[in-house]
Image 1 (cartoon, rainbow, N blue to C red):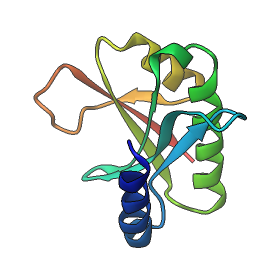
Image 2 (image 1 turned 45 degrees about the horizontal axis):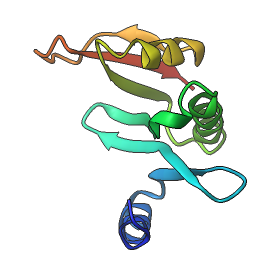
Image 3 (image 1 turned 90 degrees about the vertical axis):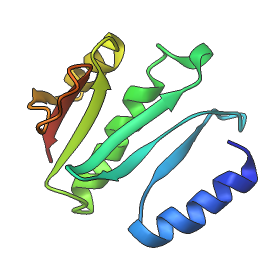
Image 4 (image 1 turned 120 degrees about the vertical axis):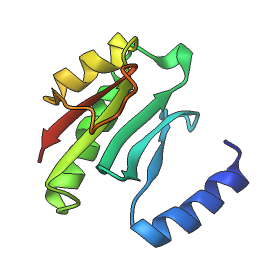
Length: 120
């Protein structure tokens, strides 16, 4: 995402909801991904995306852990959800490490999407 699009996203989404996705940066300033919150019909969803070459280094875990603390401390919601493709075992492991529990799929007819929930 280029800087202009990122600034527009911050201006529009944060102004409306008060939260959104946050850039993840290395100490040298290089952006390696994003993590944050998204409103859905079923509640607030925690999500992330990490550049392939930076995956499996704990960045997603650390970012999501801090975001869950933020959501709890600032009463963002009573629970958080994650939706994950059934073949994405890495994200499923991350959810379980963050103490999410696999839940019902909210009546979805798509067996390819798994839903995880966590009470805050």
